[in-house]
Amino acid sequence: MIEITRRLGVLVAGVAAGTAGILGFAGPTASAQPVFPQPPQPAPATVTQTVVVAPAATPQSLVQPNVAAATAAAPGLAASPGLAATPGAVANPGLNAAPVAAPVVPTIQPAASGTLFDYFKERNVTLEPQASKDFKALTIVLPMPRGWAHIPDPNVPDAFAVIADRVGGNGLYSSNAQVVVYKLIGEFDPKEAISHGFVDAQQLPAWRATVGSISEYGGMPSSVIEGTYRENSLTLNTSRRHVIATSGPDRYLVSLSVTTSVDQVVAAADATNAIITGFKVSAPGAAAPRPAAPPPAAPAPAARAAAPGLTQPVGLPG
Image (cartoon, rainbow, N blue to C red):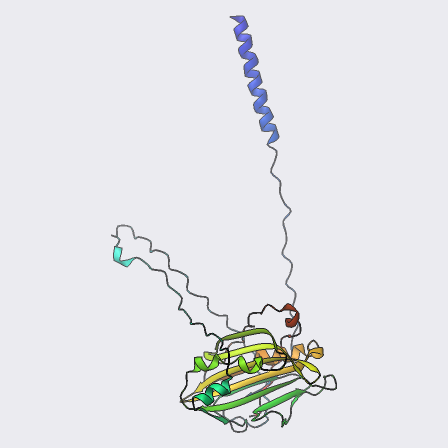
């Protein structure tokens, strides 16, 4: 009996030692040092002036832009969760909350051939050139960077406004922006028409696209494409936007081209980016569209490096 007791004592001691060993391996959990967020870096300030072509505007007038906080885009409606039952209420199976589906925006497929001018000609639509002086049908804002100026350019047929860099350049080519406006007289489908917005750029010599998008711009059908092409011995980078704008019963084609030589894209980047992002088209009294988001990048990283964004906004003569 004493021997049995001793064996039980040994067994209990062994179990206790094993338990202590297990508990001994469970050390304290590792802890990381807290990471403090870095203070945000201040964004570089950009000084711009804007010339606006607006109804009743004085020709060649310069208007200081109003500084206003940009309104954030309203996020899409989230699916509504089921309604919580009120105590004592009887649930009605016919009133189950359904998710709110976002409206489906049809995608416009780019046309494979035929420029906008070809499209309008086939449908007997007349393009009536518009002059910036006394033009009141639309409000057009063309940003004017420092060192740029309005110039007459006989090489731009039906020019509404042409501005160019009077300070930079490489001695052979000056960065420039051109706006052309046509009143469209005749019947056509604006969304079908804008699907041809890429074709004129794609017909340029040695064209290489970098980015492009067909989507609404301030509620108006619009296309924008960027890329490089050859002109004589120069490689040029260009961004081209077409907008089909409606003002009352009338419709207009508004086209912006911003072009610079490839060896000047870095030096002119701020100016050209301001023009592209600050360009606005709206009907009188309508809210101006938010700055356009950059179009999705095409799979051409080397070419995209030669296509920087454009700089400050400059307006058109009234």
